[in-house]
Amino acid sequence: MSAAAACPYTVVRDPDTVRDILHRPDDFSPANALLAVTPLSGQALRVLQKARFALPPVLASNPTASHAGIRKVVAGFFTPAKVAAMEHRIHQLAREAAEAAKVRLAASGQVDLVQAVAANPPAVIMMEMLGLPVRDLAQLKAWSLDSLELFWGWPDPARQLVLAHSAAAFYAWLRELVLDAVTAGSDDEPGAPNLFRALADHGLTIPEICSLGYFLLIAGQETTTQLISTTLFRLLEGSRGMTWEEASSGARARDIVRHILATESSVPTWRRVAVRDTELAGQAVSAGDEILMELTGNHGFPWPADSGLSSVSGGTGRAGPTPFGLAFGSGIHRCLGAKLAELETAIIIQETAAALPGIRLDESAPEWLRLLSFQAPRMVVAHGA
Image (cartoon, rainbow, N blue to C red):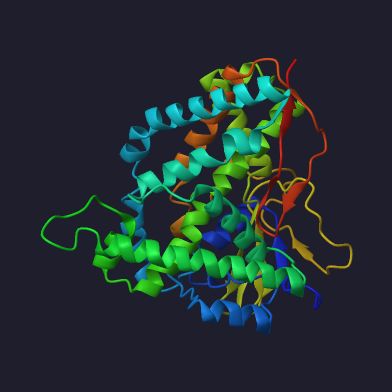
């Protein structure tokens, strides 16, 4: 079952087999989940080292016994009650963004909905839920996209160096944020609860908190922006059996979001590595084999013709999109922000459709972000009726 020599991954597409992998952490480790797809060059590594950039395994890539306690701390900031309590705030931010998009549309005749309504609300909500200051949003969004490309893309050496400088700047900003948050409330007067201080109280070091924060500040908002972007595009494209006007209903907005989660979520694939010789779907797996799991239907993924990627069916051998339940993973590493992301996306879709009736897609074939584990249209430009 090993992948061809030209490719480091064995691709597993069957949902039952994917779920089996995710529920066998002793056999299939997340240790490779956050490793750079394209090995970092010496120049890029030196740029990162100068910034004291370090990503010890803490949460998503942590295969050790410490994972459960750390996850419990983070989960405390995303409880069902806390997510539900944010619903009014999400509606407020979504409505404000949609109204601003309406003004922009009236002024220029078109509007990019990715920047107008999808980009900032998830970042604001995430920072507020984590008890962190809401600042530098435009820079955070740019850093997030650069880091996704650096770790999940195929940049050439020159591009990789540019991305490394961006990641170093992001890490320096994050380290300052962590230090400020950890010291907040350290005197007699406690500060407002914030995740980084909670992690310090749990016993994590500053590098460990920075490592967790580096990908959490990306995953906690950029993947939601991407999910919103794809949903907006498919609605306006008219290819999913629902009209733009129908999506102004809260129930219908939730329906289309769940459909997109099942068919082409923003995180269509994820990685694991075999810890020991074992079996999967009746086939032998060798220790060290790297596995790429398809979490949702991967619309138009650009596998290179000569990539050497192998595919394992296994399980029932079903064709078609995987169930919505795998969009956020499964098992002990399932995404803690799943309910929040679904809620944010549905509300933003609903408020945007209600505020901008009759708009039409301006570009039927926009450029897409296509990385190993992330996908979304970069722009969704719409014009008035």
